[in-house]
Image (cartoon, rainbow, N blue to C red):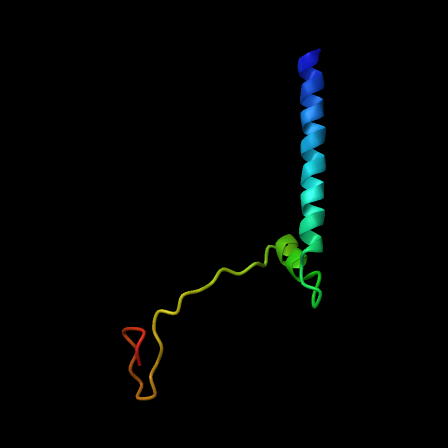
Length: 68
């Protein structure tokens, strides 16, 4: 009996904490576009930073390091 009551209390507490955390996160987004981050998370459209490996110089050759 105690186990089931404890399990139910744990589930309820966890659910409330998750909801509170989500609401806090939603309130911290920028004022310019408040739904930007929420939309990206919901639509799974968050981008990872890409690393540029080489650039084409004006003479047509590719760069081999960070210096031009």
